[in-house]
Image (cartoon, rainbow, N blue to C red; front, side, top):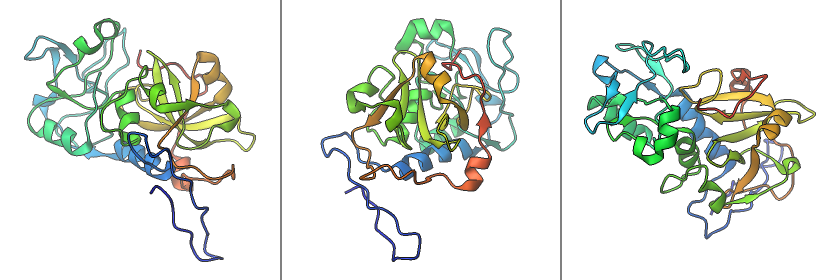
Length: 263
């Protein structure tokens, strides 16, 4: 059962959470989902030159790792450095790696990430490399929800319930089918005009996961639809309880002009 245990009175007692739909593919709490997202954003790993690939993989699929040498003028620049400890799991088109699987892939010489492109969007699954490691936007969200298989942006609505913008709370999703998806992490302003969210594939660090904050109205104008995962535990009422710690919130990246992501 997905619920928290109330603490003794006077010691930050927590509200018991109502479990999610037992028929959902997984059970998860908002705190667990956000913790998983943070673990992908903070994951430390050391790649080497053999993890860089700018060209076809062994199966002929074009791969571009988001390492520091990637600087296509039509794309966002890369970031990770070989031989050094890097933080954050790199973006991979079609990626759904658990952290242990990502580390193993890197150790076996797989390409560390694979940026998206118009050609990959057209190819869809045909653009996914079996010789690269990482996660894309829906792969990250699927991991955060503990889904047993990856659900892309067109499949996530099938395991979620549409909700009103006013009902949005930590653990919910903002999704654009065939576009992009993010995990809501709470309110960044007391008037609830700005929202915290985790994503990979959006500004300012396009090619790795991170916590951002942006004006909610701008995201809704872009076409993001609020969804609640059916297996997500919830509070009986809307309390406005904070899930992220103050230290984590202080490190969020401010995005004044959000985009759909994954250029």
